[in-house]
Image 1 (cartoon, rainbow, N blue to C red):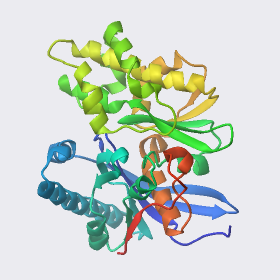
Image 2 (cartoon, helix red, strand yellow):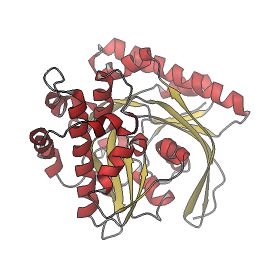
Image 3 (spheres, helix red, strand yellow):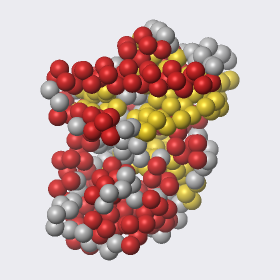
Length: 357
């Protein structure tokens, strides 16, 4: 493979299920003899105001016309934020790679959809925009998720595994055959933030509220016994799964929120540690907002001998945005960016629709 120096300056965008905000990362990528490297030029998180939080969290309940109106408006919102971001830097990248905000993810029914109109982003920024990364894989009978693992393999291959603790916790690692596999483990910040908001906080800082609570053993056992954890192979979950399978266990009218936080934290730690132990992971790179939850990390450490590697703050916060920039870089250079061993698709593919700026 020859050295590539085109389309190597890319903005990656990520809006996670925890609704923390829009992550923007401008990255430079280099490839030489099949080895890839990256550098973060600049990165920023745009915190959602209450209006956008409400729109994004309730989008699945909108009528069709309201949904597409929100899709377009969110694309314009993204474009405006990118323009402000770039104006402050006086840099023009080659392209934008936008994950969008997942609302409907139903691979079993053959579709997935993310808010954030790529055409609007390209039109208003004047930059080539890659979006809709998941649909092609779903069309190839894959889960359409997770997509980050190819970036884990090619950019962070020195670690046995990569664990992202965001709205949903997911893991990726190479199996015995050297193939990268990955899957969603459990809900994480999506649940913890939901409970923290019942106490008037956006999140449980450092897990302090959970640390002061008592674990409900009956509830913990019920959570640990969910059918999803018995499934093997490519699997993924989303907000719909959270609402249909988790929320009914957390009726805050009858139970103390502090104890629910303690139980949810213990559940997440149990699921994560079990996965590390079962797969004999020696060292794992941790990223995502959950990495800042010191009590959660403490509980995971208490259940495993795996070494948990906590990187720089920028990498913790922006790893997914960095990797989506990388997926866009691969797409524009016509290099495989979606792995069948990860998603369960019929074949590897180059995913992402491109709108020219």
